[in-house]
Amino acid sequence: MHGRDRHLHTHEGKHAPHHHAHDGKRAPHQQHTPHRHGHGHHDHHDHHSLARAGNKKGLTIALAITSVIMLLEFVGGLVTNSLALLSDSGHMLSDAGSLALSLAAIGMAAKAASPGKTFGYHRFEILAALLNGATLFLVAGFIMWEAYGRLFDPPAVASGSMVLVAAIGLMANLASAWFLMRQGDVKDNLNVKSAYLHVLGDALGSVGAIAAGLLMYAFGWYIADPIISAAVSLLILKSAWGLMSRTVHVLMEGAPDSADPEAVKRELERIDGVQDVHDLHIWTITSGLDSLTCHMRIGEETDGQRVLQQALALVEERFGIRHCAIQVESTDICHAETNI
Image 1 (spheres, rainbow, N blue to C red):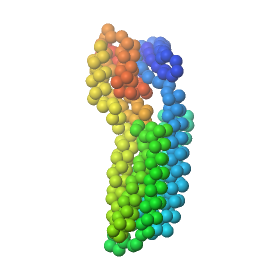
Image 2: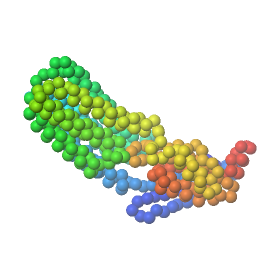
Image 3: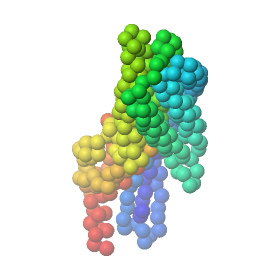
Image 4: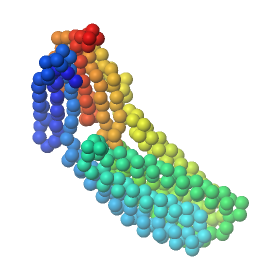
């Protein structure tokens, strides 16, 4: 970068926002191509700390409940000879591991950034969500394989005991889901959402086990056990596919749903004095933390500092992007660089 650099830093915390402008001179041979850069660095430490604490509490409660019910369904499945209960206990075993992984991811994300990892360890949460989605695929595949094996020769099942155990499991799963919704961010945090989907998958498994138990108890249809188990696994696969699609989109540096690049470009170009916006990049670092970089070309008489402030305010207020770096270039500077 050459000539005079202006850096605009905005901080948002418990105090009112304030701005700092710094001007510094470069060496004489560099003064022919000045640029202005704006970096929006908003300090949301308190907000993220509170969100992380809530997510951690919700996951811890859900992990405790899941572990207890997993053991109950496993023993109940062995005693009643129910595939639905055994498959659900296996699903809950993967859920317990997924919840533990999500808790570990929250701890990793809290680690400070380092020179080698300038964004810190936030992406570990996305990796945990991806792994959780993959385990859902494996569990669903195992259930379908076992269901196929029992389809042509369904064994007798102690349906009454099966319904009782499944009902207890359902209540526990709903309690886990409630705590995650109450304490955690299941809407926007992919890591917590992946754990939430695992818990909902458990609840579906329990509903399926109850339905199969009632059909077997009333009509002696033991084939209902593998059929309903396979149907529940298909629902689990659907949720897993949606989760993995979102995590892969983040890992591929895709733009967040809340900020369409074309819409952002149009809005920035509407700022008075802006002639062109180029080299625009928008991506998600982790759930709730989006970034933006771009270059903005302005007219010769346009106040670059004013444009910077308006641009930073616009991308935060309209698109929720709080981490951005914008370089403002004057038209006369671009002509000078072209002729050099």
